[in-house]
Length: 128
Ligand code: HEC
Image 1 (cartoon, helix red, strand yellow):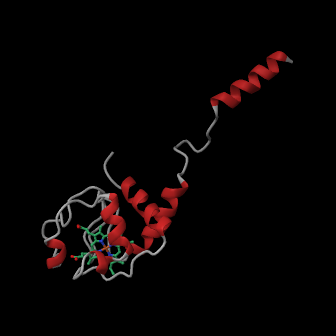
Image 2: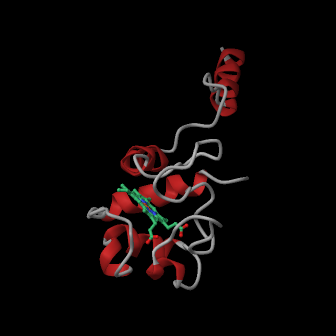
Image 3: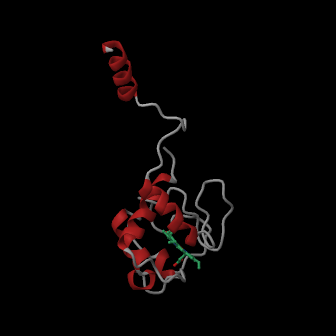
């Protein structure tokens, strides 16, 4: 009896995982769904071909207007700084409000948690 309990306890403590990988983070998974709305215009993964918008691979904390040869609007080309979480959040909430004159024709994401999820997902789409 004591041996049986010890074996059961060992199994619980070890914690088997049968998917062979990391458990899916529900916030990141939600973000992946939100970002599907971006993929009509943006390539996300490194290997995706460019689209009408600039590529977003590794965009979190990257300099604004970083893609050489992309035809940025004057507004974005002149923007300073990096796409940190705060500026991405503001831009994705209201692109024209944050960056008047931007060529990104997108209404924005009204839901605070959806924007946070999208940024969490984009953060995973980057070199480790
Ligand atoms: C209808 C097409 C379209 C959609 C949809 C769209 N974008 Fe864009 N996006 C653009 C274009 C075009 C630009 C370049 C804007 C400029 O030059 O002012 C851009 C620029 C950006 C930039 C700046 C990149 C850089 O290199 O500085 C980010 C970040 C971005 N988009 C994120 C997103 C995200 C995240 C979504 C989805 C939630 C999204 N966009 C949806 C077309 C789109």
